[in-house]
Every structure is written in structure tokens, then in C-alpha cells.
Length: 339
Figure: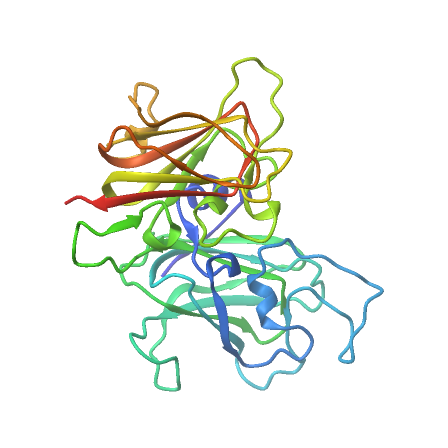
């Protein structure tokens, strides 16, 4: 199974913009177990924040590192860490391995395996499938690996990252498509923008201070860092926007736009539009016709805004518009699924 090593621009355009990090701590991903974490804890791999280095900081074990680092001289083929996904299950397409500040003690190579375990947890009998074949790593850099075959056909809820034979990795991001478990009844209202239900932010005007994928996370977050915030505009009539592909085609019943923690930089006004499109390309086309489902509304700081839906039309994508700019924490789009 071939793996393509790509640059950051390609990864951003092809993977990050169309798929979700299904193991990140923001989404509820968590370390289940690991072979060793003598120098630095494996849970650091899933931190949403960029790794840092403090050369003056030491622990009882040695120099402090913001990542996962194991002992030297591993007698086994590889050290490993098992992560439980933050979603019910997912199909996998690629990953990011960041060895920032690990130079001389970095992992020489890695592989990623996955399994679906309906009940219980991984054990010695678990059959792991390779989703990212063994690939070389370099020191202190972000590295991007993409499956040449595209998304896995199977869905998984556990992944195992191996590093050969030992060393350190700062961050691990695994991208794919969440596969939700929907209720049998179609008339059940669900947040179809939620990443847990398959929602993906596929395009935006700007994400200078906070990324659009944060909009679809569970909960209200911890501060402004895990929201979406744009550059201050200086042009009359400016609007910032994000397009979200819903996890399923649905009839929109209600919308909530949350400006939690945005107190001096919330948008002046907000609006929500929708479209019923056959593909992302059709939704993003210049001639695409969007319908306003929640009219322009005067926004307030640090508050959930339940917006009145005037057009409960079938929709596959929604567009959140900020006028003229600012920051939003979460977007909820409650809808009933349509066949």
C-alpha cells in the first residue's frame, strides 16, 4: 500500500480542507495505552496547540520535551501508542507527523495501523490493518503522509502509531471522514454540522487567528484559541464566510451561532445561508445560488445566538457569514435527515 509524502501546501489543499483530524484532543481523542513514555507522555501527541521548546526545563527523567519520547535502546521492533478516536468511527486518508524540536532523538520512521472494535478495547488478539505504511521521518519538522489509494474502505475506532525503533514525536494528526451512527428514525433532529456527525468545513474567506474546523467541535471550548477568527477588514461592505458540508442531506430546523469568549472581536452581524448541491464543487461554484435560512442578525459578545429559520429547505451545505469580520466559537445546524 503506497504512501505519498507531500508538502504542507498540498496537504492543506487536498486533505485538511476536506477531512477532519479524527484523533485530536479537541474532538475527544485520547491515548488508550503505549509501550513506553519514559521521557515525555504520549498524550502530548494529541494536543491542539503547536509544540514548544524550553531548553532550561528539566524533569527527573531528563530534558523536557513537548511530545512523546521513549527510552533508548528499544529491544522490540518499534515503540507504539494506541489512540481511541474522538468520533464513533472513521475512514482514514492521511496523517501529519510533527517531530518539532526532536533532533537526534526523533523517530527515524513511522507507520499507522487501525482497527474497529465494537465492544471492549484492544488486546493481544486485535487484528491491526496498515493504513499508512512504514515511512521515514526527519528531525524537527512537520511531515505529511497521504494514502495513494485514498480513503480506507473500512471504518475504524482505534489507531496504533508505531515509531521504529524508538525516539520522539511532538504531534500526531490523523485525517479522515467521521462515520457517524445515526438513529434509525429520520425525523430525529441532529446537529448535522457537528464533526461527530460528519460535518466538514470545506472553504472559507479567511482564518487568520483561528481555524474553521473549530466551529464544528463539541462543547463551547476553553477560550478564543479554539474558535474561528478572521483578519480585521478595512473595506466597506466586506463579509467573511465559511462553507460547511453537512454530515447528511437534511431539512434545517434551527441554527445556533455561538460567540463564546469573543468579547471585543465578535462579528457585528451574522447570517446563515444554505444550498442543496450534488457536490462540493457545485456548492462552491460562482454561479451557485444560496438561499438565506437565517436572516442577518445583530450579534452580541460571548453568547449563543439561536437564529430563526425562515426557509426549512433541503440542504447539503450551509454558509455562515460574518459582517464584516470577527470571531465565532461554534456553529450548530439542527436538521432532520432526508433520504
